[in-house]
Image 1 (cartoon, rainbow, N blue to C red):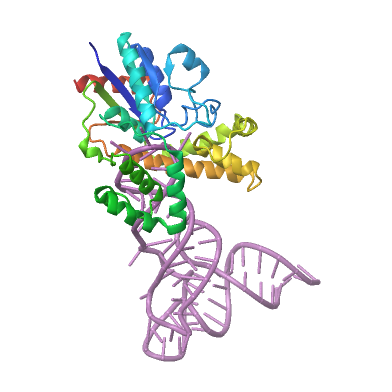
Image 2: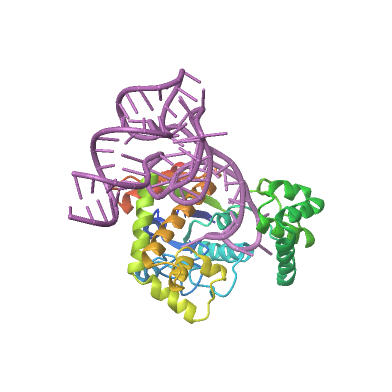
Length: 308
RNA sequence: GCCCAGAUAGCUCAGUAGGUAGAGCAGGGGACUGAAAAUCCCCGUGUCCCUGGUUCAAUUCCGGGUCUGGGCA
C-alpha cells in the first residue's frame, strides 16, 4: 500500500496553502491542516485559512474543528492528524500536510509518545501560583531535584516549560528529548519547506497584515468577543487577534495595531525558520520572483521523485 | 533676519565632570514532547553633523558653518 505523505511547511505567508492546493489537484491529494490557529472555528480571516472555493474543490481536513474556548493540545492533534492521514491513504489518495506549527510537525514526523497523561487543571494552577510567589529560579531548582535531565534542558527563566516538566514528572513520565524518538516508520514522508528571500517574505507579511484588516479582521474579532471568547484563551492570543483586542480596548489606534501585527508576524516567521532548520531531511523550495504556483509544484514533484 | 533647542547605531534617545560610547525598538542567531501564532535565551564600531581653536588628548569645552525643530519679527 502506498504510504506517501507530503508535508508542505515554511514560514507564515510563504504561500504554503495555495501551493498545497495546486499540488493536491495534481496528485489527487487531500489537505491536512498543521496550523495551530486554523484548527479553530470562527477564526478565518486572522488565521488566513484557505478560501471557501479551495475548500470545496479539494477536501481539507482539521480546519475549523475546535471551538475557540477549547484548548487543543499536541497529543490531541497528533491523534487527529494521524487518523486523517490514515483515512486519506485508505481511500487511495495522497495526504498533504500543510502548516507551519513546528511542534505539530514533530508530532506527525516522529514516533512521539505523549502517554496517558491526564489533564490536571488544579495542579497546574497550583504550580503557577507557586511560580508567581517564589520565582522561576525556585521552580527550576525544584525541577532539578525531580528530573535533573529535564532541568538541564530548560532555561531557568522559562517558567512555562519548567511547570510542564514538573507535571510530566509527577505523572510518571518525564519530558523526553526528541533525540530519543524515531521518525515515524509508518509513512514515506516527502517533506518540503517553502522559503524566499527574507526581505521579500517580510514585504508579503506586511502586505498581508494590511489585507487582513481591510477584509474584516476587526469585525471577526468583535464577533468572537461578543460570542464570549475571552482574551486569555490560547486561541485569542493568536497573532492578529490579540493586537486587534488591544485596539478595541482603546490601547492604541488601528494603524498601530497593524504595525504590531506585522512585527509579531515577522518575529513568528523567524522562529519558524529556526524550527525548520533543525530538520536535515527537509527539502527547501526557494521561491523565485515571478515564478508561478504551477512551476513551484513542478519543482516539488521533481524533487519528490528524485528522493525515491 | 534675530533668538532658543537639537544634531550620537536602521529608528527613538541616553551618556562621556575632556581619555573615541550604550539602552529600548527594529534587525540577526538560537532552544523547545501535552498552552507552540505559546514560552524562553544570546548578539550593539557607529565619519558621536562639518570646520577651526584650546589641550598631551575633543564626540564632550570655545568660535564659525550647515541642517532640523520651535519662538519672535
